[in-house]
Image 1 (tube, rainbow, N blue to C red):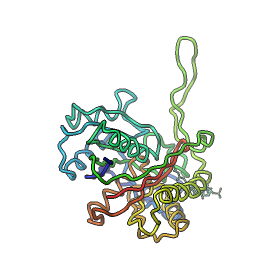
Image 2 (cartoon, rainbow, N blue to C red; image 1 turned 120 degrees about the vertical axis):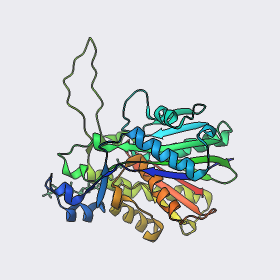
Image 3 (tube, rainbow, N blue to C red; image 1 turned 180 degrees about the horizontal axis):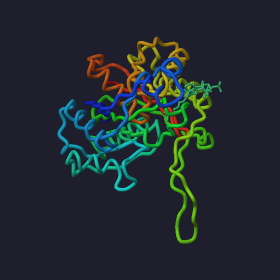
Image 4 (cartoon, rainbow, N blue to C red; image 1 turned 30 degrees about the vertical axis):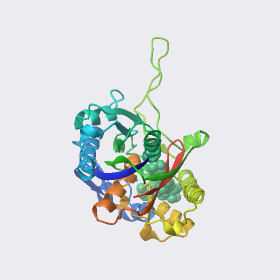
Amino acid sequence: MLARIVGTGMALPELVVSNDDLAKIMDTSDEWISERTGVRTRHLAVNEGTSSLAIEAAKKALDNAGVDAHELDLIIAATVTPDRLLPFLSGDIQAGLDAMQAAAFDMVVGCSGYLYAISVANAYVQSGMYKTILIVGAETLSRIMNWEDRSSCILFGDGAGATVIKADEVGVIRSVLGTDGKAGPALGCEARPLQNPYVHNEWDYPYVRMAGQEVYKFAVRTVPKCINEVLDAEGISADEIRYYVIHQANLRMIEAIAKRLGQPMDKFPTCIEETGNVSAASIPMVLDKINRTGKLKRGDKLVFAGFGAGLTWGASVLTW
Ligand code: ACO
């Protein structure tokens, strides 16, 4: 049996912040941001948290799937911005859904979180251990952005995307995952430093640091390569793919990836214009957008692919 997606959902904070709004609080412009990134607005959490967004997205995905929370065997939450370190996000989702028989754990793989999670879910389904799995990517990245660094904070937003997976005869066909820890410093955020009776460190609240151009080049080189790797291994041609659901990091990057694959942009659905980059939530959010607008037909072949902190990357080819 394979992991098949049977429902999708998403949730966004109420506050919408446009590029013009940002231009009132930092030295930037709508023109600079939209030309270089494609982002026009992002949602920022004020009254929401990662957990509340995750639970809202999960409820919508369960509803869309027609699956009761009590049927869930496993909940995987992908996030780098949980509300707390302990207890963790997936436990909050479990409690919020009253899915008390489900096992639950978090995955910390940055923007590749959803790609790693679906591959793990597929492995559990293939092994026969679990049949019904909820995956939620949820972030409140605004809490770890340096709002004085205009070259990074303008890219990101907050939100959550969820998918419900069931064991079926068709589903995820093949995945590839990768990590290059040596390239990790290109995109990072420190944790609290060591602090115990034997060591004392002064510390400031840590923020995301990003070598934007380095990450850009890495992504545009790596993502088409791993997509070709999954397709070649299955003898599936790029033309057979109905949609390429790519991590929404920067619209220019998605365009460069499409060009390298020789595929038209209308096969690359996006939400980055309205949401910014929402890390692990971005792939299930785009998927929800095309699912709810009736663009997907059962039997369509899809590719999910992306990259993120680590540096990490991944791609899956699947049957919808
Ligand atoms: N508004 C106006 N000017 C700006 C802004 C801004 N928001 N930010 C930077 N600039 C200026 C800089 O000061 C610089 O000016 P200078 O030439 O006078 O020194 C100029 O614009 C160019 O700055 P760069 O930082 O070199 O801009 P770049 O062309 O690299 O674009 C960007 C920055 C959009 C972030 C790009 O590098 C990028 O998208 N990289 C990929 C980042 C990414 O995808 N990260 C997420 C990946 S993983 C994950 O999703 C967590």
